[in-house]
Length: 251
Ligand SMILES: NC(=O)c1ccc[n+]([C@@H]2O[C@H](COP(=O)([O-])OP(=O)(O)OC[C@H]3O[C@@H](n4cnc5c(N)ncnc54)[C@H](OP(=O)(O)O)[C@@H]3O)[C@@H](O)[C@H]2O)c1
Image 1 (cartoon, rainbow, N blue to C red):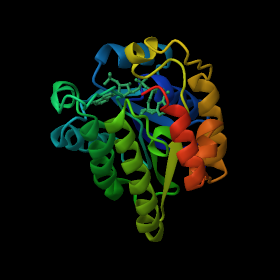
Image 2: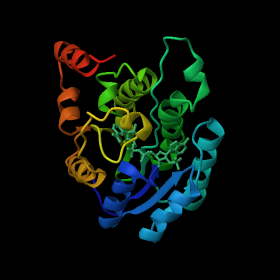
Image 3: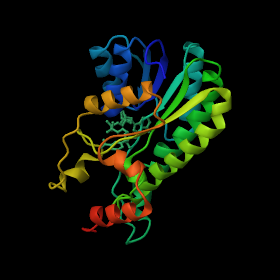
Image 4: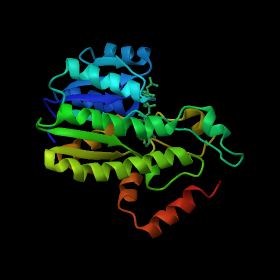
């Protein structure tokens, strides 16, 4: 897809990979809208990049997604790209039942339901534009699940399946569907849990990963990975089983 002269909505674009992609698209001459729950985080991003448009938005329920899509439709007639980037990650232990799952933010709603609903809400807004694209940010853990993050891993596997199916459905109406599959990056999602695992060494910055994503988007690579995650996208079932054992040996 073309990298310049787009109008993109990036969910959760106030930090991490989303902010790095926002910066990269701005540099290519595109217009970028970012959203998230924290107004302070969005404001800090706008101070660094005054061209950014920002919207405080909580995507953990359908009403929040609908309100965001209406807000975009009312203000950005040229919108042609949705990046479903917002996400959370939790360690959840089911050995004592559903207590931990019920106690915190709901990954199924934020990581899976929101991208599904927003994709549907944005299709009528982006259809007919050139290019028109939906870019879903999944995870290497959607291909090889982490035992300590069973729900997170499931939401990302779900987003992978949704992306494949949607790619086929939307091709006839000219909407490209990309899946971005990040490996582990710094700064980390789920920082408290990562701090408990000091052996985990991560030295991939969001800007470095965003540069890879931009090059692959321009080359129309449908499933974009890097390093570990690029291997997983193409891995056989035998290889996935091997990686699963390696990654989850401590559980
Ligand atoms: N970092 C990694 O190692 C890694 C690896 C694989 C995949 N990923 C995926 O990449 C994406 C971003 O990760 P990241 O590392 O860039 O993390 P991040 O910096 O924490 O970004 C996540 C963004 O999502 C927003 N968000 C969370 N819940 C939201 C909600 N209910 N409504 C609206 N926005 C919400 C957050 O903003 P607010 O808190 O202000 O709402 C934040 O800006 C996620 O989908 C993640 O699963 C990350």
